[in-house]
Image (tube, rainbow, N blue to C red):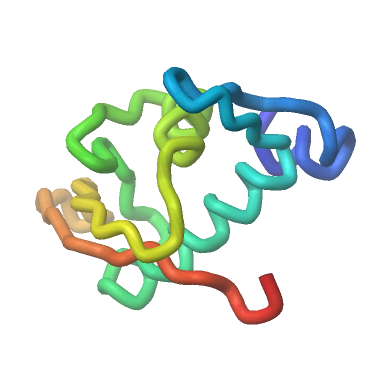
Length: 103
């Protein structure tokens, strides 16, 4: 099940607890962070069909791994994102995670 599915079904359920700080993130929080990341990746030139293989230097093998990485990201943070493009090339872009209007 994708994180967005959990966000729709159980938006207030705790999805992650940050090691060290104890900060909790709900499935709704993770969904918001994934939307924020998708927005800045599109602005950086990544497109549908490109496959993200690393965020912040951490490998991404599936949606659960992505959710773990997203849990540690915050608006304003600069993050390298590496992807395999739909044409087969490898690209790393530097993005700054933004704040969505109204959030």
